[in-house]
Image (cartoon, rainbow, N blue to C red; front, side, top):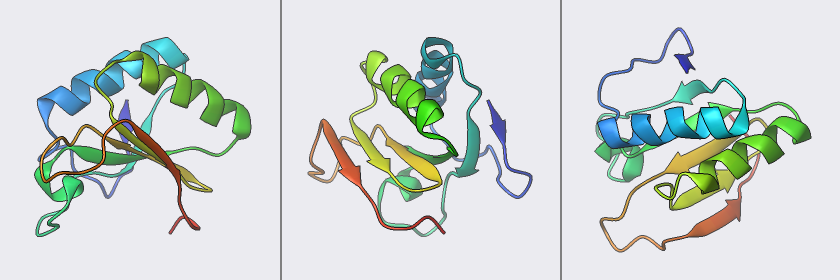
Length: 106
């Protein structure tokens, strides 16, 4: 797993990092974090329980999502045109075990 140069590793929960590393093994893909902990965000990125992972092809997306679901720790996944949102947040009454389609990636 690696981080886009402008993204810091700090603030991302150890549990999420563990789940991501496991998902990399299952998917046989290296994950590139494009968004991690966001100070001041009142949602899961601000809790350190969410990241966005770069994803450019449909085959990579298929393998990565399969790997994420095999971890049994990832409970929320959002699919965007250029990234996958990965979330282990169980606080704040967020819907659990969900997969959604988002708009265009930033």
